[in-house]
Length: 222
Image (cartoon, rainbow, N blue to C red; front, side, top):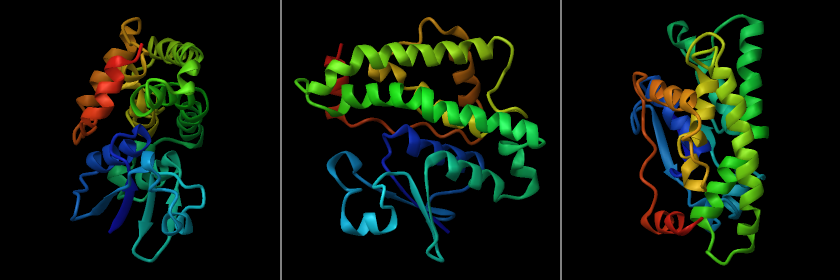
């Protein structure tokens, strides 16, 4: 049994729920999901910090007390710690697996810091927050990341080297909801097609609906 500590509206957390769905793992039978209200300080409590001093979700905990953090590291472990027939999510030879990892590093370094942060500012900060001054720069950099993805998809169906896998799951996490941060996907037909291919995968799990108060802020954000 794996315990997942996550915030359902987070793309980084949803990655794990998505892979668990593809693996056929069921909540309460194969894993526990503990909702952590990270925007309101739930990851800064002494209890949480004793498990993850970095104070972030997602985090998984095994029954023997071992803890793992960082969403993409958890994806790699979940995809590898399965029967051979399931390893297609992190498949291939050493070169192919490294290519998959390169897109996961891209996601955390060149994609998530802009697309995810723009979404957070639009939906989880007050309309008068000084952080909103960062939105033009974040959106510009977000579009730069999407342009890189669009070029890749002109010649490849997936971001994982051996077929649909954890690089696609990692990039899906925040790409599919980029519009929440004012980063529209209209100019990226290849990305939109890729998102539909992800949604068509067996065991796909959609992100739970965003709370009404966050949707209201998103609607009012330029």
